[in-house]
Image (cartoon, rainbow, N blue to C red; front, top):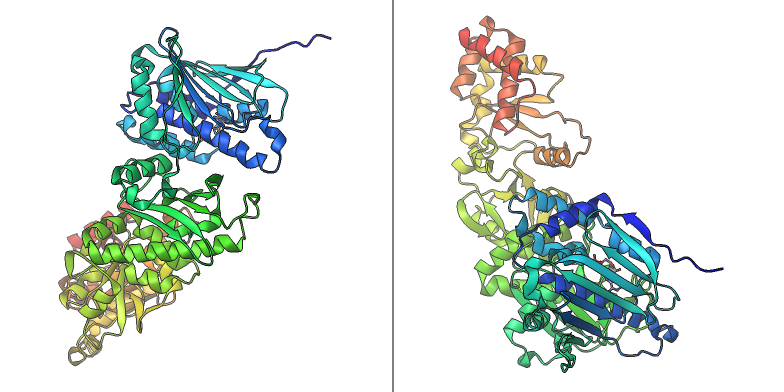
Length: 620
Ligand code: ADP
């Protein structure tokens, strides 16, 4: 029987088509990254095969040396990227180049769509694992010919990057992948060998496999190696220039900033490893992705092992990109065994301590830089207070907050303690994610009047770690929006003054009765000075801000019943309490409750009823 070599036509997954559309039509000025993406895929394919061949040498097919060859032809308008790495099976071709497996990619598309200048974000393409598709920024047709190591069949994948692609069998003899780009009219610049050479050394200098470039139009030209190849992290620190460190950071992280700090050290002793870590300046787009991973690549003596080693760095340091290379791990280690490997645990401890020390020294030596760092990554570090670990004390020492006494200042917990009177037993904090309006909140007014410092907790994560950590030194953390707070002078106690004030007491009683289904209690406030009333959370209820955060996360949280505090010295409250017999009690009560909602930065639930009540009382 003759074998029919059928050509199959397959549709791209809808998201891929959308992505391709964005990529192909972008006017993005750094289109050159397509080559970095292709080379990085080839290098990954070589790394993968090198790793697998440790236990199965046959896969190498006698070809021990891995390489990446790049060829260009101006005449034929082609760039070809060829590797002898692992290759792809037919299924893998469909899976890898026809669908988008990761949710991150959909996120990426969203983020580009949201961003009006859509080209701003496209440089982050590699972060989301859509690197291959960036070829369509410069090419109108792409062909991928590939043979998976250890398999007999080979395949050709072809697409113009619109809605579908074809796959058919090919006759490729050697394992590996050849990617051929037909270059678009507007991308001539990339057919220039000098241009390509500079792109390769800019982005791919430390790829550990030789990358060669060959202009196939020129008969006499030979292919020559472009990249330096020696891993930067194993070079002598003194011989490395700052630019080299920064470029390497960009290559491994796909970030486009310069790092705020580079940490390069060799640990020798019980465990030996070399580590090159970077503290970024800016947040990366995936910082708060739910399926975020850390950014550490693990090597064993220059051989790439994994970039999915969860236990090598704590989750709250996941924004730190870097390399860890250790000779104390066996090359044959399986990826599963990396999960609870004692050597990895020790490296994690060493790396964590090192980073904490570097952050402390940044704090001591360059406070302004530290604050830039803190504004971008403080919220992630605080996640370390929410989980159980041995670093709570260290993290608490570097926490920084804005606070009520000085708008422009960031303070640590120790500085807070220095700013309070000796008899203050608590660390007052105001948790509110609404940074804009927080200073105007009635919750804060008595504290501002009395110059009692209050720390602002403005990250959603604050609510969570504060459930885990109750104290700093001997002072307890106390939310100003929760439970009773008495800031009044004992000599001039509001309770005493109003004990005999029947009108106010009467108002309190009416509110209690009329609002009994809506709120937990009504009290005469000991914290308000300017505002008429305020809602606060019960001492053992859920904090107001926390409720907001949970609602934002779509958790089905019921409104918890709050306590309504009224300010007996406020003119509106005084007047109202004097005219109660003329007014409809239910309406007054609901109106006051709505007022408290609004003062707290909320929207009233029934605006028309609110206006109706308001009008009626005005008229009277
Ligand atoms: P990423 O490389 O970030 O995973 P890409 O879109 O660039 O995303 O590639 C998708 C997948 O296609 C890769 O993860 C890899 O499995 C496969 N692939 C791409 N290029 C090659 C290659 N040269 N050799 C083998 N596999 C490849």
